[in-house]
Image (cartoon, rainbow, N blue to C red):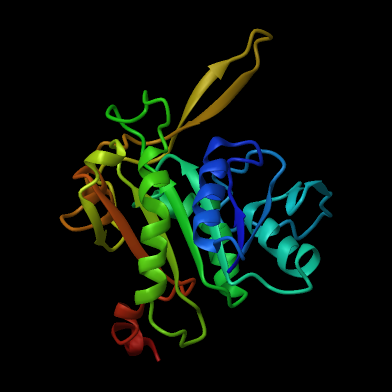
Length: 260
């Protein structure tokens, strides 16, 4: 198997090393793992592409490249510049430092990379590691992802439906904030929403007297609805959420027929 990996935390992020180990286990001795990742951190850029300015791409080693762009840019770089001899069989994005459950999915550059791969017709998964009191001080906070990642990806590939429709499926995987031994299993879960939380701004005065705003995130320990992604993560399960780039609210199409 030929696998492309990318992320949004940057080429030097520890989660990318974890993802490389997962990809090597999946690819096997006859396979290949290629890395095209952002030269600098790109967290929160979602599905951004560098449409209005060029990127510099640097080869850092064998099958190892850094691009001055977003995760979606990195996927485009791989498919249309670095790997033009043969496309990858699978794209993995992550392992993100922190969860991309619930509304976090909408901001995530990690998901942006997987989404771009799906739009290009390639199977893709985004992998993220939830952080919490039970794992953030471990020697390896990514332990749950490292131990359970390859097997879970294999099982998803085996169970995934054949591609149909205009927008290919991609998968949002979130590993719970627990040591690997405490992971209870995997749950297929829809995307949830944390109630009463969200990003906000916090003002700060610089030493020079200038006023700046920091963006602050929400409380990540707030559960979502029963059976949805963040709740199953907090309960010790890996969440697997199938997604498409189709943003249509299909449930209200018939209701709006009245305006025609």
